[in-house]
Length: 79
Image (cartoon, rainbow, N blue to C red; front, side, top):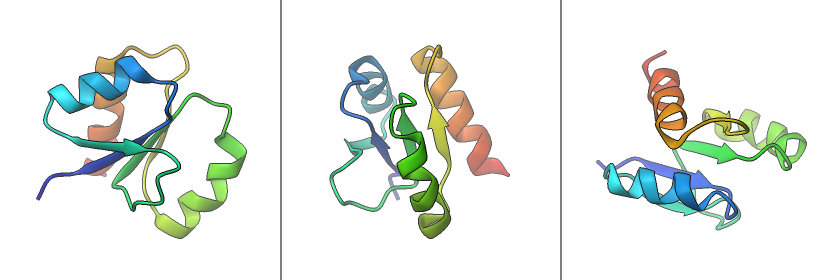
């Protein structure tokens, strides 16, 4: 089953990279359940509550390259 990653709308390079790697990418505020979330840091406090409810990795992409974000997501899935 294809993993779904919710990505903040402003993170276009990360969104495109993850799509090219075969992941289904949805908007952060799409209302869809996701296996991981990628934020730019601005929504960090709001997502703190969602992380508890959904129990999915939340990656703060500030200062990270798309490759780093994917490595962080996959690393969290392994734990």
